[in-house]
Amino acid sequence: MARKETITKEEILNAAFQMTREEGFAQVSARTLAARAGCSTQPIFRVYKNMEELGEDLFGRAIEFFSTYCAGFAKVSSTPFVNMGIAYIRFAQEERQLFKLLFMSENRHGKSLYDLLNGNSGTVVREIGNAKVHGCKDPSGMFMRMWICIHGSACMSLTGDYDLPEDETIKLLEESYKAFLNV
Image 1 (tube, one colour):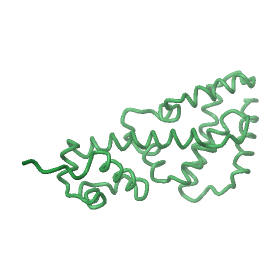
Image 2: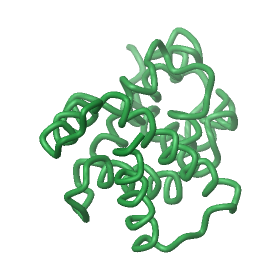
Image 3: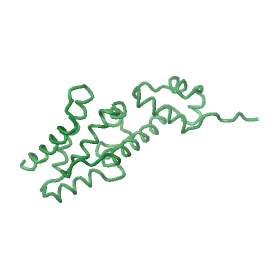
Image 4: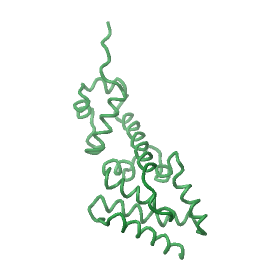
């Protein structure tokens, strides 16, 4: 009689995701994951061919988490790119390890930064359209300028070099947008 499965693929993925959130993906190995999930390594390799395959599922879970995080973020400004920027910077501050995995790793599983940001909801496309509605003559160029400012701020927060309160960050992004209109 076959042994009953005691741990599911979803439970393994959940354990890997929690480890990644807390410690970073580099800390997820078959042994550490098995210890976290309360099983041996055998169930992990029963549902995943290898750790790379697990990494792909984990990356997908992180993308979903980021998209949900941004979708639920309060709108704080009518200025294009500001809401996206505040959500992105806050994500870097609150979910440091997931931010590193998604936006600072070399292996993005075939996704560009644009793909990750735009997501299934078309966030970037919507913001570019919003900039056009607000009179921006080069909304795609504006996105690139704002993105450099936003991504730089988020990365600086990881090293402790960015400590502006949210209201000042909103003001900084709104002023940057206005300044870039004249470029």
